[in-house]
Image (cartoon, one colour):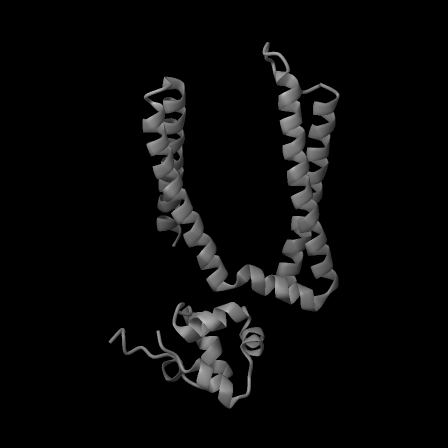
Length: 66
Length: 150
């Protein structure tokens, strides 16, 4: 699944480690989500979107599901 | 985080009990109170050595776990890191998928090995096939349990 996490991180000048700490996950998980190897669960997707002040559908691309 | 802290404390108590029980087993095996009933020469020594080694290995793992838990309980930063490491959803998924794939591969290997061994020994064949059957049964049990639970 494509996401805008990397762009949002750059905008907020955050490292993967910092984002992982903020949402209670590991850096490896953030990396996997960013490269599309792993699809975040709904709670984690919510935490990430909420952290950036965005809606889930604005951060995660659900067009594949449609 | 308090709930997790409490869980680690409970885990520590269980680890300590485990270490004491294993130390007891080692002592009993060493002085010969628990010894295998076998007429085969040197078998008791071999078995006591195996039990002693296995108990020592598990004890070392428990001691390492105890040290990790104690250090985490004394330091909030370490506690958070340990919590994240244990509850990370991707790590959990990797673990579940790895175990599931490993168990399936193991059953397949047991069946193949059992069939090959059947050409040489009935005892080995029955043991391997029975193990494969038992493991499959446990896997089915797990599936039924989680089908009802989730």
